[in-house]
Length: 285
Image 1 (cartoon, rainbow, N blue to C red):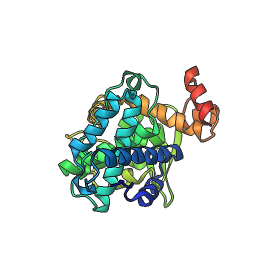
Image 2 (image 1 turned 30 degrees about the vertical axis):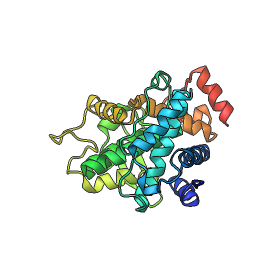
Image 3 (image 1 turned 120 degrees about the vertical axis):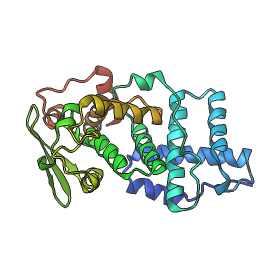
Image 4 (image 1 turned 90 degrees about the vertical axis):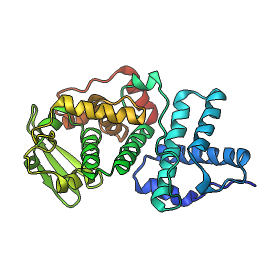
């Protein structure tokens, strides 16, 4: 039988609602079309709910044997993880076959200046699924709030460590964070970008610090980096605070902001980027 890309339109709408970049949406839709074409050829009678971990790993292994680059295979893994998580949320499948699927080690990705849209998506999905498995809502919200502040707020790790709840102003359509450490500035997050930080506020303790240790004290930069490293390993990604901050920079410039404008957002006098990063940005604008 010819296998059809199930829930094609609903999945595309889901990606739009998740505010994925247009290029990411196009890439994910294309990769899932390729996957279902393979599935129809190799497992023509397999129903959607019968697709298991062994099925998706078989697809990945065949792609590697066909000579696909690791970066290309990792894009396929990101798409698979996103799609089957969507099916799980929709209640179409009872078990997500990609919940434990990890990206393949890639030296180029480890040395990369920033995370691609696919890598960001994969990181967020991994954190969400890991927390769901352990049923630790507070830890999940803390981790997502941390990632949000680096990715969408451009914070330094020291700024996240010292951030106080009374430095955050909640508004209906945005969240304004006053950074008092180092160069004083305001960080503005949209309601969507700040949703995890807002939810984390509801379950956090009485400490004046946003991120605290088990003892209720300010979480140190080293502890924050340890959390990021752990999350990165679970996702098969090389993660550190500066790389997430760099991702913020690249995303802002891709949206048309100038170097001076992004420097002002970061609280620095001058933004200096590697030549190859500027070339990548120019090519994508």
